[in-house]
Length: 526
Image (tube, rainbow, N blue to C red; front, side, top):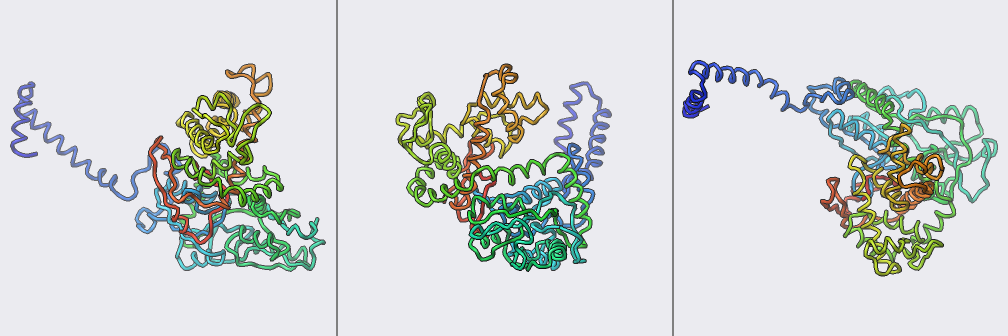
């Protein structure tokens, strides 16, 4: 405080009845109080600010991390691009089951995630041993690891190893029918102890380690006939079944494989924090929600339908692509999502007419067309633009606390059945102790609106609630395939979460990895 300011405030204090001695005591008190606050302010300015009391896990995990190690303000993670665990999504950002899980961990403990892409499982392990990464994803912990230089977190997901085969040969029903044949598997993926057990139980099998970058790449080699059989995990086989049409699952091995993260042995403090996070993620349902998001919906489409769809992508989509691109540019709705909706509605037939009178490329009703200002429902461009704007508006009318990707799935359900019936399903979910903010729970209550004991109490009455569930599942399955075959639009315009600001992402961000992004991820949505 300057001398001038001191005397000016002293005069003001006198006018309010304070004596000189009283005012001086107040000044001294404030000075001492501020002096005592300096250490607190210094702590607030450091790299590790105090943990908010709202997150008990943050406190536990932060306590396990070294506060005096600046290198751990960044968590370097080695990964192989894979549609089940980690890849670049349609909006040019990372996505995947393991990415989402680790990103949540990094947010909790206030670390910056630094991904580094490698080619295969061998390089994943090498990156740990040579301290190029502090953690590796995409490896299986199927048993005790013989490598003393690597330690494992607790398991966060259990999957089943299965034998897949090329469908040009007869489906084997058991081990005896593939005796003497070669069965491929991912080299250094963590399956080695399982392979040893299976070799002992079935000595006639010839196991072939393959240095492929991912299970997805291995499945493509089964699909093209390079290998007649392969050992893969069931959840990855399901993800690829509508992409590679010449392979199928033969039989289960009866074993279980644990998904876990690998770390250098000297990162014991990071191991403790990760295990604390995994336990919390299981208890809170986070892992179940991510598993439903990434692994479960893709099996809904029949194989023959997927084959027809891929043929239509090759033959019909080139003429339609500019229309979807324009709709994305004007509304912010991702063009491949629009294309998936259009295919589900009309199989990309601009003259399609249903038995209920809905017409055109996006199957818009007459009332909806008048509401949206559509003059010609049979004009594909006008129909796509209107449907994109309608889907964007439906999403905007949902409660703000519904997060992605559930927000988009619920908007799609509303597109199919109406926002009122969706709200009835959300109220019913709340009554049944389910979460009205999660699509996986709304999927359970929507079909109940066709039953008298439920629709009689619903505000908007009877609804064929199973229809929007099937609609969303099929749109998601078509969307998965489009993400495989079609690149992002060159200038991707996405609506930001604050409700309308538009940000642009260049398509060349996809070149960050040599592997093409594949299959679904909800983060690349509207």
